[in-house]
Length: 536
Image: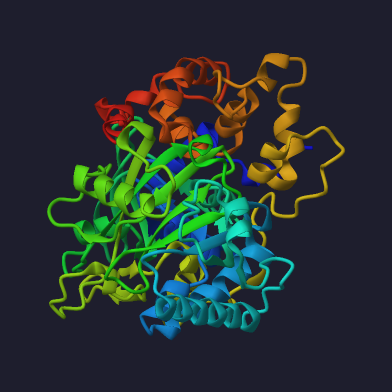
C-alpha cells in the first residue's frame, strides 16, 4: 500500500541528498526556490532526463505559494482588461491541471455575481458577455461541461439558495459561472515536489542560497549550520518576490493580495462563491469563496507593495476595511472585524515594465525568463499559480536549447502527480476529507492509524485534521518542523485559534515519528512560528 519509496521526502532522504550534493556531485539543473514555480521546473527538468537539485531556504510553499486565493483560475479577469493571451493561457493550463495533473486537488467552484442595486443593467450586461466569453475559452481549452458547467443567468431566489447571506432587497437575479478551486495551494506544491523526487530530483528544504555562480551556488544547511557548495551546469532562480536578492539586475513591482477568513456559518454556509464588483473599477472584484474546511475566504486586494520584502506579509487595517466594506455591500448583514477568524497576505512577483503605472492591478501577469549575462543563471518572474506548468516548460525549453543539453521533449502536459489517479472511495470507509487532500493515497494515510485509533481523531476540537495526517507529513511529505506541518502540510495555521489548540499535539506526534529531526523547530536559531503568528 505504500507509495514508491522514491517519492518519499523525509529527514533521512534529505540527509542523503545533502551529503551527495555537498560531496561534489554535479547536477544538470539547480533550481533555487521551493514554491509552485520552482517545483514545477524541477519536475519538468527531471522528466526530460536531466539530473536536478532544488534548494529552498525554508520549506516547500513557505512563500507566496501558500498565500494565494487557492483557485485554478480560467483567466476571466484578464479578458476584462483585454489581455486575451494571458486569459487563454490560464484557461489552457487550468484544463491540464483539472484533467491530468491533479484532478483530486481541483473541483468546480460555482460563482454568483448578484445583479443588485449598484450594478446597472449596462454593467450587468457587460459582465454577462464576459462570463460567456470565459465559457468560450473553457470550451476551446476542451474542459468539458461535466467538469465546469456552462454559465447562465439565474433568478433572485436561486441566487439566495447558492449564497444565503445575500441581501434580498433590490436583487434582480444573478449571473452563475464556474471556475476551478484548489483544495489547497501548498498541497499542490508538495505533490509536485514528491513527483519530481520520484523522477530523481533531489529536494532539499531549509537550505538558504547565498550566491549564484555560473557553475552552481553557495548555500547553507540550516539544520546543521554547515556551508554547502552545490555544483550545476545550469542554474534557475525561482525565488519569486525575492528574486532580486540573487539577481540584482531583475526589477520587480510586487503586488500585495490580502485575504480574510470567516466561519462559513456566518454567511449561511454558502454553496457558491460571491463576486462583488469594486465600485469604479470594471473587471475588479472582491469575492467570498467557500472552502472545504468550513471557512469562507474573502479577498482580494491588489495593491503595489513598497519596501523590504517580509517573510510573512501582514494584512493592514486599511486593506481589511476595504474588503469588509466591499463584500458587505452585497450582504444582508454586514461583516465586521469581530467576525474574522484568520488573515493572510501574499506578494506576487510582477515584472517592472518601466511604464510608470502606479497600479499593479493593471500590470500584466505574463511571465518572463531573464538570463544573467555574467553567470548565465535564468530567473523566472511574473505569471500566476495556474500557469506554473507553462512557466516551468519555458524555463526548461531555454535550458534544452543550450549546446550539449540532452533533454527530451516536455512531458508535463499529461503527467499526473502522486495521488492523482484517485479511485472511487465512497464505500471503503475513507473519509471524503482525506480523499480530497490525498487522492489515491488516502487509504494509505488512513492505514497509518492501524492499531492506534487515536490517530483517527481530530488533533484538537474543531480542527479538521487527524493524527495520521501528521505522521504522513513527516514520513512522506518532507515536513521537518512543527511549522512545516501546521502552516504548509496542513493549513491549521490559517486560523490562529486552531494553531494554538493543535500545536502541542502536532509536536508530540512528530516526536513519535523516527524520521522527525528532534529540535528542528528552531532551525537557524529562530522559529518560523513566531513570524507566522504575526499574521494573525
